[in-house]
Length: 311
Image (cartoon, rainbow, N blue to C red):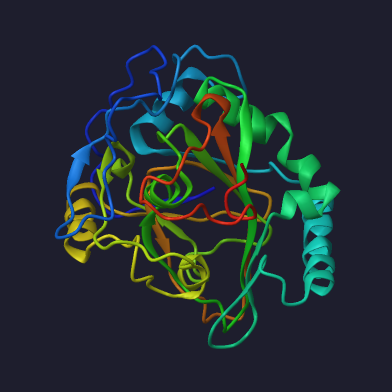
């Protein structure tokens, strides 16, 4: 998988050994603030346990993940796996119709995301359970893992919409009750991810900062947040994104179909729209450490539906 770097490599990460407790007496990730955002150092490690954790990744690969917040691999899915997943997308879409698990582009009506796909497809569930996927999560998080969320994001040619800058953990903490960023996402490319068809962009090293967001989140807001280019809540301030990007740069993650991107839950990331003729479709599976079980949402709202945050 090719990575294009737009600025300097960030300073060395805090990767001291020893898993840290996720039970803290106070909320150290305060967000959805009343007046202004803040950027605070992250008090938790990225690689939990030690760089000697057994698993698919080598110690140098774990250190790179701890430093930049992500790791890439090619040839994680076979051509047969990819064909099976794309067939499942068609089957699930036809079967669900206008179900809440189907999110459509507000402009074109084309499918933007399908949620809970590991529950809707035995084929996808088997892929998510593989050692090259779930095993990497267990190694990095130093724990048994559960699936917090699974989805397929689709960006059809000429019609795929963008996803604005955000940290997943900020949302999962505020709206789902995830205590600490002891979670990660695996993005599996079902089509080539080119520089031109809306690939993921990551600010490397941003996972070591927690960027809070402004504004009390209304109840029943989740569907609007999934269809909006720039959601009004849970979105960082432009000056905060600019500050991180000026300091750390922006990496554009590309690669052939079958590639995998493993990235920390607190990475600041986004993707542009797709106006090329070439579709960009990715299977995402989010793993949460078993010891990091969801609590009441820290933002004070009702928990989101199960297909967005499996409890």
